[in-house]
Amino acid sequence: MATVLLVRHGRTTANTSGVLAGRTGGVKLDEHGVEQAVALAERLAQVPLRAVVTSPLERCRATAKEIARRQEQRPGLASEKGLVEVDYGDWSGRSLKELAKEDLWRVVQGHPAGAVFPGGESMAAMSARSVAAVRRWDARVEAEHGPNATWAAVSHGDVIKAVLADALGMHLDAFQRLVVDPASVSVVRYTAARPFVLMTNTTAGDLSFLRPPKRKSRRRSARSDAVVGGGAGSRR
Image (cartoon, rainbow, N blue to C red; front, side, top):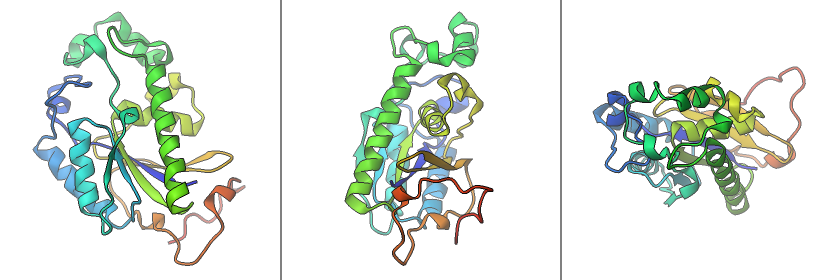
């Protein structure tokens, strides 16, 4: 199938103030976050994106707009509720230092698959709907543009961690081992047999290897076998 770039939004005012923003309105990129979005868009400009799909929240939309603006073919933006931030319910808008004193904090850290936020959703429900959204869009992009197509999903830290955990075959209880920084890019290539995780949490580096080949090649969806011994790496 196609290849997805999992992009976290740039830094926000909530990130620097130590507040769990959740779905709270009015949370925007701070000055550094805007700079991150510009640099991120420049980095992704070398990769033709067939679609840019974003969480409907402002911080993701601002990041996604910058990415789409720098694309030569100017793909349209699509809003996807399945990529929206976790509904932290009553935790939203509270300081992380305060939340760390709650009993639920230890559950979120050690057993996130069993965590249900008061007045909000469970981590398991977030994982299910975000993974379903990414896989659905990936199939759609391949159907419309072919198996060599690449697209971007702009979302939030915990959402991207859940998608990566699924791609890696990890139980959701282990997803806190993953780190997803603001304006980072992680890359997953889905195939009929399994997903391949090509990169995680990268904030710099050349992505030109993701450009589609100039000559026709076998469908990526047919190349589901892992290379025994590791192989020679991506061709430039």
